[in-house]
Image 1 (cartoon, helix red, strand yellow):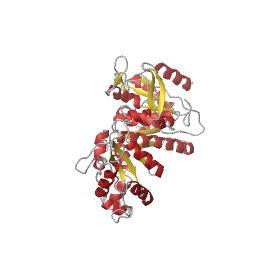
Image 2 (tube, one colour):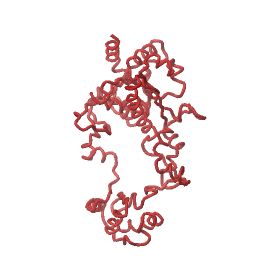
Image 3 (cartoon, helix red, strand yellow):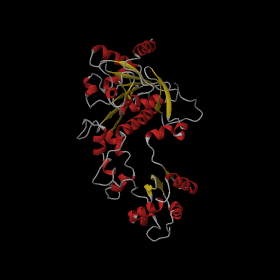
Image 4 (cartoon, one colour):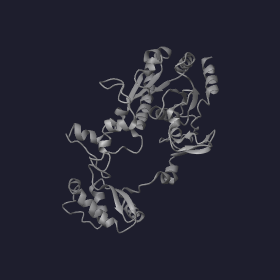
Length: 385
C-alpha cells in the first residue's frame, strides 16, 4: 500500500491499544509497520475477549481492531539474539513506537541515547500512563484509571454523583492519535534538522488535551464542571429527548435554530424563560419536560424528517450494527475489506482520513503472530546491502 508515508518504516514495539493504534494510523498512511512481538503469546491483546473468532475461537477481535496494515515478527527482547535483531531494525527504521513503563526500554538495553547512536534520524514515540517524569512519572496507567484521574469520568454520566467511564477506551485511543500526529510533525522537522527526536504523550495528557471548554470553565471561570447526562453544559436545547418510540437528539446551537424547534413543537419561542440561551439553560429541566411532552406525539423518524426539513441538526442514537450497515458510514470508507489468513474475507473499521484525488487504499489484515518473520528478515537484509 502506498500513501503519504509510503517511504517511512515504523518499528512497533508497543502492545495493547495506545501504541498499536498510533502505529496503525501510520500504517493507514502508507508506512511499513513492523510489529515486534514476544514469541510466547505476542501482544497481550491477542488474548483479550470475548468475542473470539476463527475455527478454534482463538482470534481476538480486540487485536484485529488495532493492528491492520502491519507485519508481525516474533522476537525475544531479553535474548542477545533478539536485541541484535532489534538493533538492525532500528538502523533501518524511521520511527520507533513504545509504550513500556518508564525505564523498561532502558533495562532492555535501548535507552534513548543508544537508539540515537544506532540511528540519529530515528523518531521515537513514547506513550506512558501519566508521563515519564513529574512526581508520579512512571506510574502504570490503564484506560479507565486514566479516565478517572484525568477528570473525564467526572464529566460523564447522569449526575455528579454517578461518574461513568466513556464506553470506548478513549484515553488509549486519544493517546494513539496524539502520538501519531506528533510523529508526523517530528518527521517533518527532521527534513530541516536531519535528526530524529523523542515525542512523548500519555493517557493523562491525551484526556487533559480534550477538556476544551470544560477546562477553561475551571482555569478561567473558576467553575468545576460536573456530569450533566445527555444534555450539553452550555447550550440548550442540545441533547437526547424521548419521543413516542424511543429517543432522538436535537442540537439547537443558536436562537434561530431554537425558534424553528419551538415552532415545530408548539412552544412559544418568545416565552421569557426561553428567549435566549442563558434563559433556556436556567430553565432547562422545564424546557426538556415541555419538549418531550410534544415529542411524545410522534415517532422518531417523523420528527427527524421534520427537523431535517427545517435545517435543524438532529439524529438517531444508533447501535454499532446500525452504524456499520449505514450507507453513509460505508460511503466514507469507514468499513474496509481485508483478506485474513485464517478468517478469509473480513470487514474492519476503516481509517478516518481520506485524501482527495488519491487512489483507494488497499489494506492488509492484522497479522498472525510472527507470520512475517521471513519476509521482514529478507527485506532487512536487502536494506542492509
